[in-house]
Image (cartoon, rainbow, N blue to C red):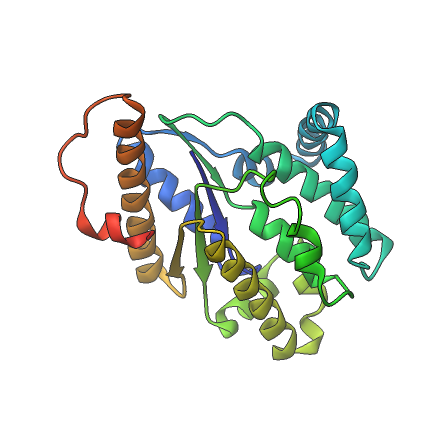
Length: 255
């Protein structure tokens, strides 16, 4: 089962993902945190080598999809050559993770997945119809996440978090000089992507993360929703009987 956390840089999606992982691990649920481990645990050279390995395996197995993907990104007219290279690299890495075999008993948590890759491409795209260009035609062949967790935070909180970072790791940080306009554009792109996922019937949970209290309550809601989905899928697959009743809040949250 693939769960993806999405939000503009500074919204706290990685923090939310880690908190959800802690809750699920306490319930003895198997967790795989590929993107968190690579970006927040491993050092630069090791991280890059691992991502290249994932990409290489994906390219070898799906050469036609790879060529189509690279062509579509180039057609979005990225602002800089570096933006194009980053978009291709990150997009193929995420595609390699989405293509992995999914297990009913193991949860893969991505703090940067398909939605985040789309956002990154869109933020530097100069072509207006960039999202339609990326998705139309290949939607049925792209393996979507089983659940998207949209993490939102106030623009002031986002700006403060980005300015407090020791190093710039997102494109939004480069545009902070534009002030609130850049933040509003980033948020608008995120809402556009979420609307597209919902239209494709991908379950979406939206949680707020402006402080410790919202972080805790949001993580609990997401964890309970994942447990509910996991229980339903286990029953559907015949993996085992449901253990008790699934909380109503968890059943309804992702519908």
